[in-house]
Image 1 (cartoon, rainbow, N blue to C red):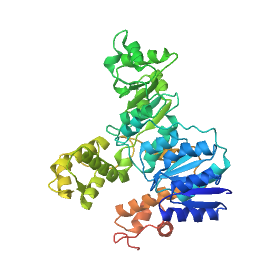
Image 2: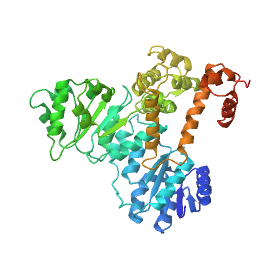
Image 3: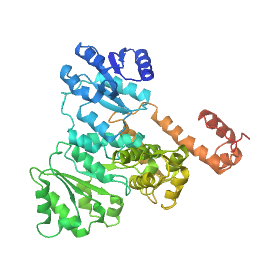
Image 4: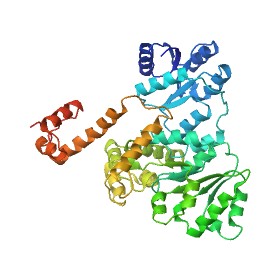
Length: 457
């Protein structure tokens, strides 16, 4: 790697780590905690790449991107941020950042992206910024999360928001599919045009489809839960899409059902399936992003406080219980539970007992699963691998992927097998079908902790 890199971050540890890593890679590094200093360096012509945080003591890093593009056209900027919301990812894309990485980031991954940024000539900059009213609206959406699956979703939305491709948004009830559709519209070039949600009733009659198109006026049309529409309504949509001419609206649809499976069962029209599936956005359930549950719970507390509700905070054990629950109703169920806790808690700190009381009226905790009912293990693994590739935003993952994935699978498999056999390594090795010495070696190589239940035999 060769070049001069400007690093702007208010965290001294991050500045030190990046400076050391980039210097060892052969780069010259200028690091600062000030956006004013960063912009002075840019205006002076210093730097071949900028790596900048968003929230800084003297401003917002995203606000500097248009200024950097105006001063130094073609200078790539990699945005890093702990503000892990869909708004941050989309704003970074709209401001034409070269790349966006959430904190905490993987250092080797950042190094690879930095090397690529130094090699690739930047295209002509686009200095368009996000509409203020749209930004304020999106700030209230519960589309927050720092887990890899959510970051992959953010990247995908940022990439497709200004394409003409239809978007099919899938996921369980309560995951926020309609909010994703709304975000795609509100951050796109069509934001000033209508956003029309279409029901079966809107398609009835000879003039139904033409009325829908007239209402949309070249904006966006969302067919909400399209799998619930009758065959007749599906046929009307097909004919409507086939008749689209100039100034056609953006077409989006949501579904909590597996449309491909329904199509194979003869319960969904094949011609409509292929017309809607330009880009598929799979919104993960809360069970697939457990680490985001406390973040979302705190988000809903803060939002309730802004709306005038009593000030509340979660006790540590209360938050642990919230994290452990499976939330079959996903984000919507979590929001309703937090809202209830805000008004029923006896003290400012919400206790574990109060959480238990609220959850006692909720559906029972379900086994954690990452896919739909009856989904094959290979299909579930395939989804996670696809999201891993999507997370890199068009850049290939670091070399050594095969062994890295095997290690990711082997570790949990051995840990679960050890738990299932009560820590008896002889039984565990027999269960796995491997030699006992091999099991011991893998426990050491994979750094699997041996608890009291897992004593070496």
